[in-house]
Picture (spheres, rainbow, N blue to C red):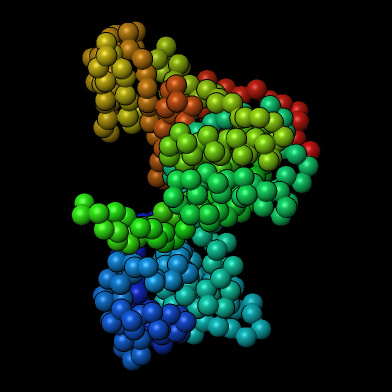
Length: 376
C-alpha cells in the first residue's frame, strides 16, 4: 500500500496515469478556478502545469480538490486496482472501463462512491509504520462510546485544540472494529489554511499553508490500553484528555511503561534466543545507549561483534534508550521490525502482529496486566 503524505501534492506521475477523459471529468467542477490559474481544462491537459498549480495553492484553491487528489494518490496501487475491479463487478451498472489504469479506477470510484475510497484510505492508514505512545485507562469504554453521537462528541472535544494551533476546525474521527478492541483514524486540520501575515515593511499578505494531518489510535480492551500516534506533547495531551473524558468517563489516560528493554540489558544478546511456533529468529538491528552523558548508537546487519566488544560498559553502566528488533517469522520471508523506546512509553512497528506480540510478552519485553473488564 502506498505511503500517505499530505503536505505537498507535486507528483505529476499520478496525473499522467489518468486517461484524459477521466481527468477532465474529475476536474470539471473546478474548471473555473483552474482556468483562472492559466490551465486549459478542455482538450489535452498539461499535467506538469496542473501539478505546479496544486503545489502552489492560493486563497482561491478549493480544499476539496486538494483533499480528493491526495487521498486518491495515497492509495493508488495495483492491489487497489484489483480490489476496485472486484467491487465494480458487483455493481448493477459497472463504472470502470476494461482498459483503466489503477489511477483511473481510483478517480472514477471517487467520482461515483467517495466513501469507498475513504474506507480503503483509512485501512491503509491503520497499516502504516509509525510511532505509538502507550497509555492505560482506569475504566473500560463507556457504553455506546463509539456510536455516531459518541464520535461526534470526541470530534467536538478535539476541535478547539486544533483551532488554537491555527490548523483549522476540521476534525474527522472514524472508528473501526478490531479483533481485540477497536481503532480510530483521526484526520485533523484543513487541507488548506489561509491567513494574513505581516511583512517586515508592515504590510499584510496572504499566507497559505497545508496543516492537514492523520493520526491513529488503537484500543486493546483486554488491558484497557491505548496506543496513540501524533507528534508533539500538546497533541498527545489533547488526545489523552479527550479520549479519557469522552470514551471512558475518566480524567486522563496514564502513560504506560509496559514495553521494556530490561531483558536485553540484563541478559545481553541471549535475551533474543527464545523461539516460538511462529517466530524463528530475532536479531538486534539497532541499539542506542546513554553512557556517562554521551549517546552510543549502534546499527548494522550484524551487531554481534560490536556488542561483544562493548558489552561490559554498555550493558552494565549504560542506560538503554532504544532498541530495534527484527523478527523472522515462519510464514513470511521479509523481517518485521519493532522499535522500543525505553522511558518514553512509545513503540514503532508491527507490534499488533500476534506472533510478535506473543514473543515480546513471553520473553519479558512486554508486560501486561490482564483485566476482566470489556467494552461496557
